[in-house]
Length: 83
Image 1 (cartoon, rainbow, N blue to C red):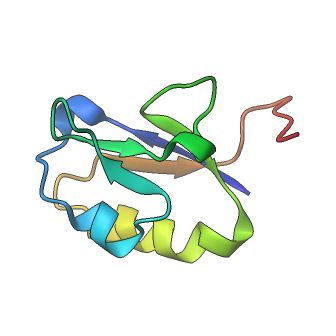
Image 2 (cartoon, rainbow, N blue to C red; image 1 turned 180 degrees about the vertical axis):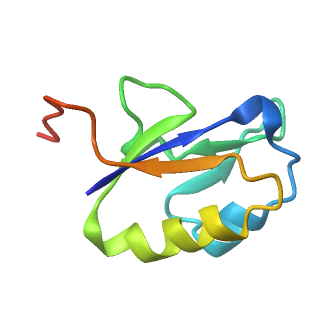
């Protein structure tokens, strides 16, 4: 399990992340920036979510291929309980 934070204000709306990993990333209809899909969000935040093992590879690929480098990956926050 990994944690993802998107610097949404730095997003250039290229669509690469939601094309590479559409189960986790989505385009926000209001501003066109990337956001975390609702079911993976932490505390309802558009820019922060938790990735489970089955999506880790595509999320990592999306972060690596992001031309704006606004997708940041790290360990889950201390005390995070996915239940």
